[in-house]
Length: 74
Image (cartoon, rainbow, N blue to C red; front, side):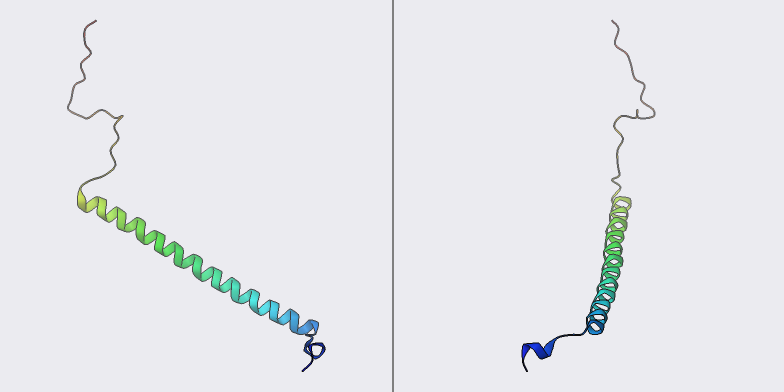
């Protein structure tokens, strides 16, 4: 077969580009959902670890209830 005989007509080019485009779009959508599920699973796992371990975020700027802050005399 000579290279000049292997020329694709425009209809074949259009269909191949369309098929590869649809396949790429489907693959992208699948990977996006998969990545979001993996990320949500990690966030949920971290929340469970915080709840079970007893360690959580601490706000150091908020005064602790029950402790009276004394102002030194000037």
